[in-house]
Image 1 (tube, rainbow, N blue to C red):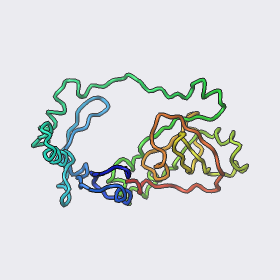
Image 2: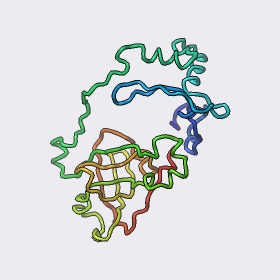
Image 3: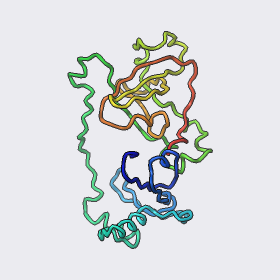
Image 4: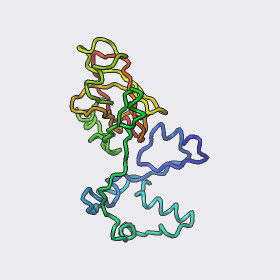
Amino acid sequence: MSAADTVIALSAYRSEAMMQYADCLLPLASFTESSGTVVNMEGRRQSYSAVVKPYAQARPGWKVLRVLADLLQIPSLAFETIEDLRQSAFAKADACALSNQLQHVSGLFDEDIRSTGDHRFERLAEVPIYACDGVVRRAPSLQSTRDARLPALRVHPSMFNQSSDADSAHDTAKAYLVEVSDGRHTVQVQAQADAGVSLGVLRMPMGIDGNRGLPLSEAPLSLRVIASLPEASAVSTAGAA
């Protein structure tokens, strides 16, 4: 984004990274300060109302976009109330229709990948319970809990047993320094062995600082063990934007 001519950021919070690439910041109301509708995994609409008024000059996202649409003379976004927006969004009968059709192909078991003998992994990237939104990420009490302090990566123990790159002190190691790459991006993070993780899977949650440099993609990942660590230091999600 730094290479773009103009970057306008809409956010409820300001971060140092945002200040580096954004030319203009428009304050958004957080989800607790906005009314809206979500569609659950059953396909059922669930509407909610704002708990409190937006802080200072912050406004709900749809209102900010409506004003920008007025400036750009886009008539299709001229909503006056959240109910007008809901009626437009769900006007079609299939607006909340669910599909069980899978179109994703991991590519983990392609012949050309097997023939190389290299380890290839698929990323499991869940969003931790206390990293799901900007409000909980900035709550010191929640970020001090065990649930908020997760390892950046977990992998099946067999990966460390087979690795020839790591130290020999596997029996005393509580964690490992590993390098993960998708072919274009590479990060070095702390990893822990977890027998609950399936073979061929790297469990790398979203919302953790150490994993920022590895964006989500469909590319298979490679992993290299750099060193064994005597102690595991927890990482927090508090720094995520």
